[in-house]
Image (tube, rainbow, N blue to C red):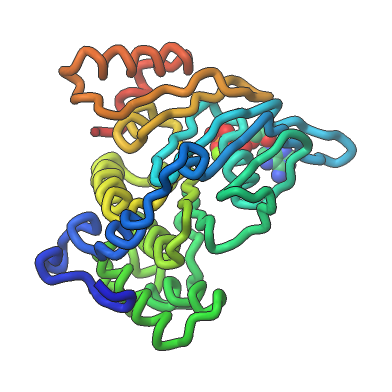
Length: 297
Ligand SMILES: Nc1ncnc2c1ncn2[C@@H]1O[C@H](COP(=O)(O)OP(=O)(O)OP(=O)(O)O)[C@@H](O)[C@H]1O
Ligand SMILES: [Mg+2]
């Protein structure tokens, strides 16, 4: 499939179809063909003893004491931990929004973390879209910023709106969308940049449980298809287990990594390994049963 192609008809559903059921196979075929071979080449992100502080009036607040983990290309790595433990802070540091006070973060072989389209960010808030632009313009605008021609930006935006099931809403403005649709636009906008990594900070946190579960499934299918790497912050153990390959568990602030748990290949709640892993995460987080009730797999 060529770069400008729209997805094949066989992927398309009716207007109510899901974003997972649509989409381009370009990422899978192109990126799959250039699979790195060496172990070092497969590491996309390496966080080594990262220490991150904020200056708050005359005080220095340590948000992250020392975090160490790494992430492979094409991996979905989940960050979980109690409120205030520094999940968003770590994500922002990887995005290049805040500097390190110590340690090192290496992304794609370099330490220059100047914000760029290779790391696209999706936040929790529904108001991350430009309210005065249409859905199509919201997705096309960052492409113009990174130098795409108007017609090319439009074609790419249309392709990613198709992938996320938003074609029918292309001419609407954000205030005419549901919360779930706004999050789809934010995801489409991020994916359209074809980043090496998607950084997602509780992107489904404000959604109702049913919409959230649907978007989880759809995001997972898109990630499988495009092979985009995802660093995903969540509060939910079930979301981490549903979406993730591995889960980095952060402790109470100022935080450090308590454990990194592999959640690949687990069966459903009937699988003893699933139950064991869930209990382990539960224990690490000191969570209550309420944390386990929010999201369906
Ligand atoms: N701009 C800021 N200035 C000063 N302190 C901040 C700032 N942003 C965050 N912090 C502090 O850094 C710590 C980590 O915050 P962060 O937002 O990363 O936590 P979090 O794990 O994402 O929490 P939550 O789950 O509630 O979103 C907290 O103690 C917070 O108060
Ligand atoms: Mg946060």
